[in-house]
Image (cartoon, rainbow, N blue to C red; front, side, top):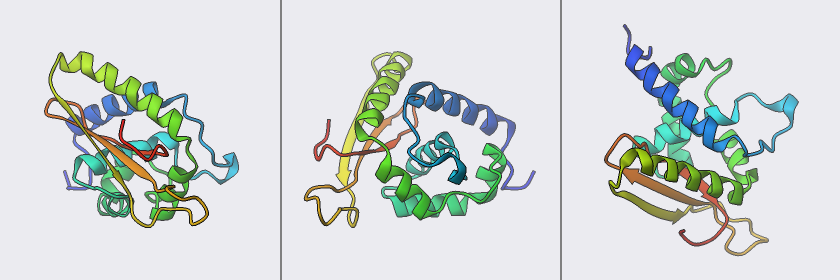
Length: 165
């Protein structure tokens, strides 16, 4: 099996993660016009989770991860087109409602805490450079990461709160 093809175990783990993302983030409305969507919202969230798990700490790093794992992601997610570009990721995250993402993220973390049975989850937040809207002070894209040493992959979510919760 070549390096770009996901193994059976990778497919099974990815399916569990995908199902979890779909289950907890299904109320998030995709702000893109139906006819112009080339990548499913949940595929983009999945790619973001994988990238953050592998050490990406900003949107550019997420886009670079997607590019470097193009074959693997295309095979795993059955992507009809290429992996999402930086612009696609940025536009989607800029227009998603932070409150909805936050609620979904908290629901996901609560569910994962049941799986973790009291194990520690570390949470960190950062404002991303060069994401501010010049007409809106403090409008940086904020990334919140949650880390666990047990099964749970970390995820970064765009927030509009300006503080960590």
